[in-house]
Image 1 (cartoon, rainbow, N blue to C red):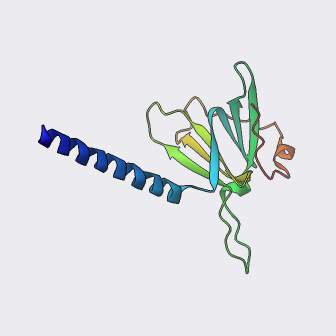
Image 2: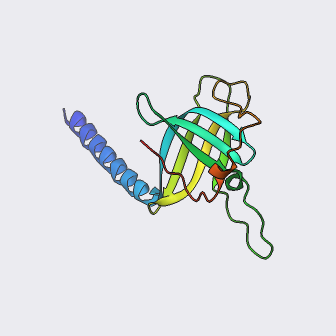
Length: 148
């Protein structure tokens, strides 16, 4: 009986100690960023960027326009290269569905990541007809306004 009591006490100390260290580690790893992850319904590459369509309700869709400048930060002479506002991450083959993660820092838009399949034949990729001109939709875009 004494051995059982000693084992219980040691186990209690062990579990209490690990939870204290886990809380300390969590506090150190808190990030100044938060993100919103959105499943994508359709992605259209366009000469000025990407058009992404996502659900904003059960029967409604919304679109966001992501300029191509976000995905390749231009190098300005005499300045440091700024990190891009956009990143494309290729998904492995399989049943993983494309998504978009929009990151915010201090409540303001920071950057976006598109998780997409690399083959254009995937059902989420679309083609914008050549005669369609939507260049104006990509002008003066500073952030992503997510509609729910």
